[in-house]
Each structure stands twice: as C-alpha cells, then as structure tokens.
Image (cartoon, rainbow, N blue to C red; front, side, top):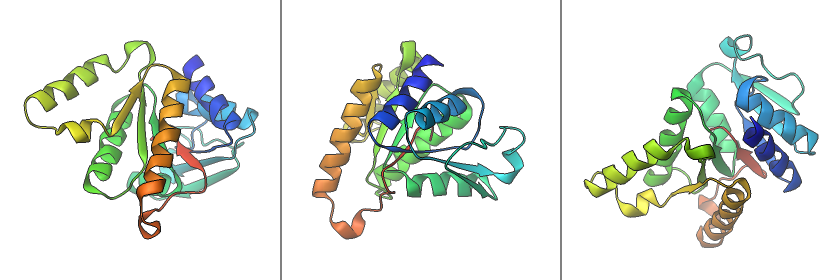
Length: 185
C-alpha cells in the first residue's frame, strides 16, 4: 500500500494527471487519494456495474461512468500518456498484456511501466524471458515493457520514453491524453 501511495504522490508532484479505474478502495484508491493530496487531477473511469462493488471514488476530479470493461479500458487508454502497473490480480495482468499488445501492434505509442514491488513480478518476468528465449517474443517487444522496483526510477524512465516517443512520432500519429497517466491500467 505504501508503494501505491508513493506512486500517487509522485504523480501529483510531477504535475501529471492520473487516469485510473475509478475505485476508492485497495491500491487503486490509495494511488488516487495520494495523487489528489499532492495536487493532481484525478480522472476515474468505472463501469456502472462496478460502482458499488469497487465503491466508485466520489472525491476524484471527474468520475466517468461507462457501460462495460472494454469501454473503461479504451477510455483510460485514450486519455493516458503512459501506463503504470502496480502489483495486482488477473485484471491487472490482462490489462498489462493488452496495452503491451496494443503497443506492439502500433495502436499507440505510449510507455508501459511495471512497478516490481518487493519482487512481486519476478515470476512473470522469468516467464517473459522464457518466452523470448523460446522464440515466442521478440527482444524489441520485450524492451517495450519498462520494469523497475524503484518508483522514481520507473517514473523517470517513463518520462524519458514519453519524450523519446514524442520526438520521433509524426504529430498525426500521437494521440496522448492531456498529461494523463493510467496508474493501474
């Protein structure tokens, strides 16, 4: 939980905007609360069926209620400039691989960061290495996933990648949100 709060705090201190899943509990809620406390704009995107289950966050700058998970992920992705995944369950895993796949296929040119808190993603990273070693994942695609166990290290790498991509992408291909970061994809 401390890492989630620090991610939110750093988002605010860096002048970023948080785009996230809209809940008020768990890691997502902790990131949002800390980002708000640090002065960030916070945009939550939540399906109407999850407002009660995830306790839609009433204190965010804007809470966008959508019809489905697909619409939620699409709206979050369109409004974000980068993606950060914290430790999470199957929903987080699905979202990591989806935005990574979108990047590989050229649907977006946005940084994807994985915060490996206390080695949480070590087994997943070994699986990814094994996929690469077996010829199922190209090394250049693996390199699209920025991994760090240090919050500031990861956020710095995301900023560098954002600047690099912005400098080399023709303006008509850039579809960033206004300073947004999807903290939990």
